[in-house]
Length: 120
Image 1 (cartoon, rainbow, N blue to C red):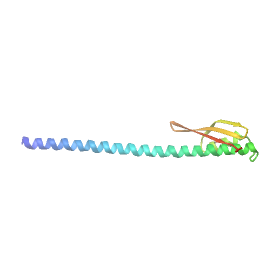
Image 2 (cartoon, rainbow, N blue to C red; image 1 turned 180 degrees about the horizontal axis):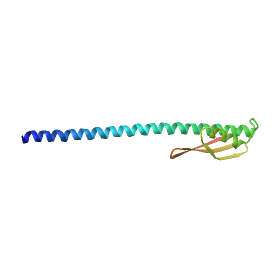
Image 3 (cartoon, rainbow, N blue to C red; image 1 turned 120 degrees about the horizontal axis):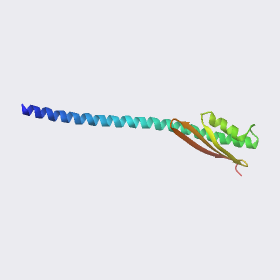
Image 4 (cartoon, one colour; image 1 turned 180 degrees about the vertical axis):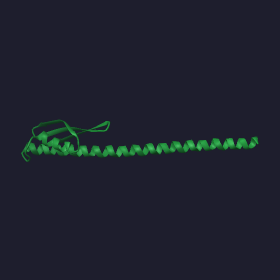
């Protein structure tokens, strides 16, 4: 009988070891999947912020040159605000425009910068 108990004990130890291993591997795969999903979402929002900031800078240059009506920084802010962002800084020197914008997203704050101007 003790032989059967030892076999049963060895079997249980082996089974528990594989259960722990399967649990660890499954947990690691779940965490990797969650990380990838969050990373892709952040990347997409950041790309949208960069595009909006660049388009805002181009609109500001067009406003400075007279191709668009309105105020340069206001026109730039319109682009960024369309995606939920905020223009943090808008400066211009002649026809060169620099814009910095932020996009609060969950517990993160995404930041983008853009520079546009007329070539000499």
